[in-house]
Image (cartoon, rainbow, N blue to C red; front, top):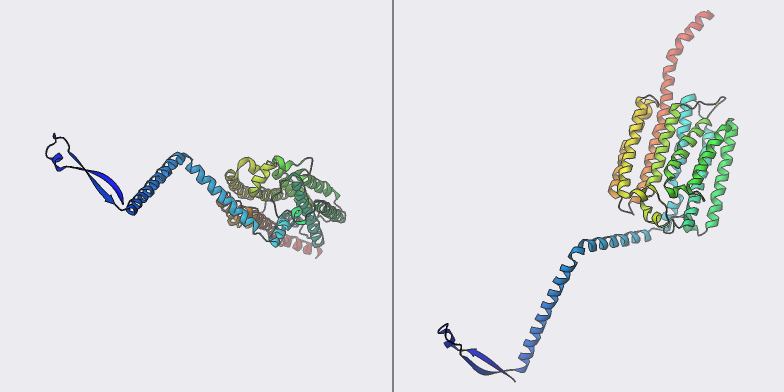
Amino acid sequence: MVKTQITFVSSNAYSSRLAPFNFRPCTVFFPQDAVQRSLCRFKKSQRRCNETHTRELRSNQELPRHGILQKCQAEHTETSHEEEKEEDISQATLIWRAIKLPMYSVALIPLTVGTAAAYWQTGQFFARRYFMLLASSALSIVWINLSNDVYDFDTGADKNKKESVVNIVGSRTGTHVAAWLALSLGFVGLTWVSLEAGSLCTMPLFFSAVFCGYIYQCPPYRLSYQGLGEPLVFAAFGPFITNAYYLLQRTTSELPITNTVVSASILVGFTTSLILFCSHFHQIKDDKAVGKISPLVRLGTEAGAKLVKMAIVALYSLLFILGVGQIIPLPCVFLCGLTLPVGNLVVSFVEDNHKDKTKIFMAKYYCVRLHTIFGIALAAGLVVARMLARTQLPESIVPLKILDMIKQG
């Protein structure tokens, strides 16, 4: 038993407010286990109170940093999620990305548009030259892709790029040799077609295009690291290559370089540059780390998305202006105008996903889709314009035939 003394207040204390308090002590005996249980409950209650008070103090102290902490946690969670997604990519998917088969549209479209422009001018098409040039152009694109992976590997820009050919193959030297071998074979094919067509004046255009590709990525120039990749790609795949393919479709005399051909090559170069621009959205962090100042490193993804929208608007505005000015045939304007939903798709995708590193990877493939369908529509418009001109030609020739028959009679 535990002996405890408790003092009770006498009832006389309440008889008058002025009367002094009378206290009467008494002794009460409690069981020892009951006292221990009471003390234990008291200590637990006091501990809970202290913990609650401590949490309130901490929350008050950290209140100004609450938003920052939430942001950091969100970024960390997002980064971890992206890394998990990247780790889940299969080897077959990495090989498919390394091949970059959709990117070979940049070899197909300039050739097709240039050939269609020559058909619009002469009404003739040389299938063997077309496919020989297509194979040679594809080999040139192989050189661009492989050498780009080699030199980005040297600078460390492709350190975290799992779909890099060098990272997949594990041989920098082998990839480099394969790149220059592909370019050599491509030049053999281009030279052969130039000799067959009797148009060696196209070779300076091909050399200019290759030189643009070299200073774009190869040392000591590496102008892509200064943000000049898009203008170089525009010149190489637009005016240089497209006009060269056009000139190689000649018959006996040189084809004239008209405003129509130059305008078509500008449209091709425009969509090709858009592919390169959008391919940098998911590489900003790695580009910054190695000092590669691409346009998106300077602008950021939000401003870059706005620039993509402006570029699409400029593309279709230029198409409309060229059509109104009768510089390109109206069938080209009509058929290319039908591709506007694809252009809107590129804009909406980039605007919605420019902050998502995993999703924005697909932006360049949306641009490839636009580049391909726009280029095919442009070439088809030139062919249709030639066919419409043929149907109208006999009407003007009939009176001449009648006059010849009268003279002979």
